[in-house]
Length: 117
Image 1: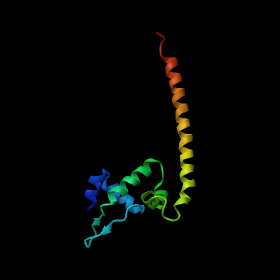
Image 2 (image 1 turned 90 degrees about the vertical axis):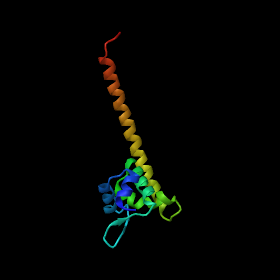
Image 3 (image 1 turned 120 degrees about the vertical axis):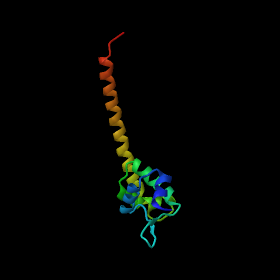
Image 4 (image 1 turned 135 degrees about the vertical axis):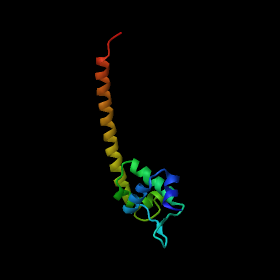
C-alpha cells in the first residue's frame, strides 16, 4: 500500500509516517519510481508505535524494543527490556502521585474560595 493509504488506515499523517521511517520505526519498500510501499502489517506496527509513544517511550527506545512488543518475549534479548519498562513505570507512578497531589491542592483552594451556603 502507498503512504496515503497507510495514513488513512491509521489516522497518522504522512509527515509523521515519514518521521517514523527516519527514526527507523517503519521500513517501507521502494518502488522503481522511489515511492514508498508498505506491507499490510504496517498498519498494526503504526498502532503499536502510537501506543508506545503514548506510554511515554522515546523513539530510540521504541526502535529497539518494537520487535519484542510485536513478537512477545520469545526473541532472544527481550528480557533485557523488563528493567527499562519497570523504570519507566516507576517514573510514571511518581508523576501520577505528583499530579494527584497538585489536584488535591487545587481542590482545596477551590473549596476555600467557594462561598458557604
